[in-house]
Length: 190
Image (tube, rainbow, N blue to C red; front, side, top):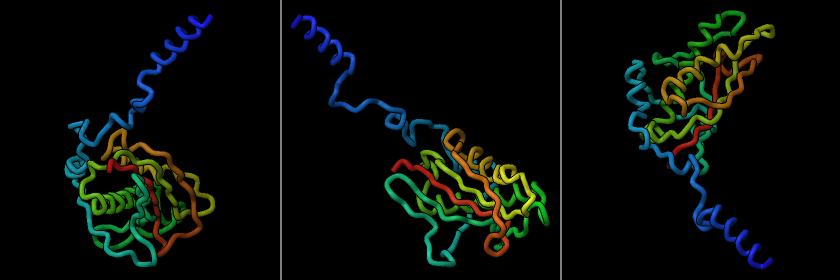
């Protein structure tokens, strides 16, 4: 009986491998440099997207707060290269296509924040979560179609690493009557 228990115990230990060595997970084996084709900044260039300085926040907050390997990006609006926000209410003064473009502009602004924080977008491990807020009339029902402008850009730039969990919700108003505001959580390599 002792022999059977000893054999069984040995088999269990051997099947577990080295118990002092952590299990090999996808997160451990994946690195920023594992995929030589991963180059978000080259993709931005190919899309003709120029990142722009976001300046100093206009209120008592920061553009990004970091804890460990997570970056929490403050909500940004659809400020265009000319410095003007895309304003208006979806379902009233803006079409879904105009809202989509506004959300895409927010994405460019958030990528600008990431670039300023990290120095290189190759350090992005994945886009974790996106919270999209749409300035919408009470009867507007296509919030997701608007925030797709943001999500589609993240996937275009980061590929599979750009796919994220998401909320797309309607708001009665947003600061300065801007069309959309989006905040984001990003996991980075270092």
